[in-house]
Length: 380
Image 1: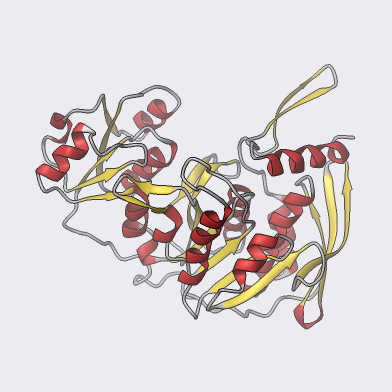
Image 2: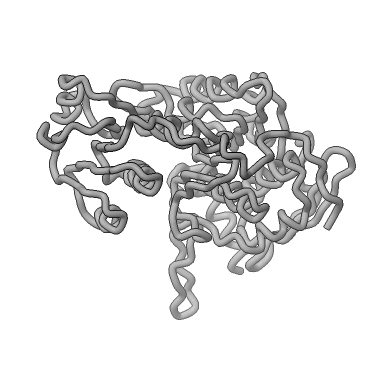
């Protein structure tokens, strides 16, 4: 399997230190979320409720599965937007990304001089602020990558918190509060709110960032590739000098932007010049076997249940973080062996008459091509 890694990145190491997770904003008790039935907002509502706040919200589209999910968390939902939904006045209003400036509740919050913020600001304010933020960002692969990082830290006994943009099958939910030092968040480059058109991920202030890829996407808010790259460049340069950037050397955009980093840089890829790279890969039926080499003579072999070169790339980002944290190859293999994936990421829905039905979220041309190429040998 190979020798244990020596830790190169030193973050929090006392998982039981009470200073890691101190309660913040003790003057805030009640929180109202405008647009609470959105995937991210609904998940944030559940996190806040579980953290001990009194949470309520409103939305104009209230239906399962989100309405059922919120009801199971005892979160009150008002259907439709009206100023009266802010009575009695909450201590904080969280404004969803889809909410417009003329929304009755947004208008009322401003007129009543209520404290308000965006979803990314709330995530940082209540969760990331007291943890080391680990952000998985990129045009492709960030959900699977984030889930792999969460599962690695869990297997290693680090009890991470997280917010991932998909349901993690290992936990049957998309978030964890955690008590450990790390909080993993999927970093979305989409705009934040009507009052903040900057990318969401700039609010997450990463101490560790994984950059999977940078391509043109979200044509509704980015006019061209340069605008996309400008957003990711801001993310890369926001990592502090004592932080860590793990970047995909195989992706031209990620590789180019990684050179702007002010912090330690570790690269991964399927070939040279990546520091953590694949020396051999076999894409077989139901498994991917591969050998990895790295700095200081590191070599190890692994089996992965994930299909395709794109998922091997995602896996390498996890291996790179393990290398930096000094985790041994056995922990990496245990992570892979027991990783159950993410809903709608190559999710097998069933099999009938010899036909396997797979649900996948891929919609960008690059992602669709990679997914189809991955399926052929995996289900041959």
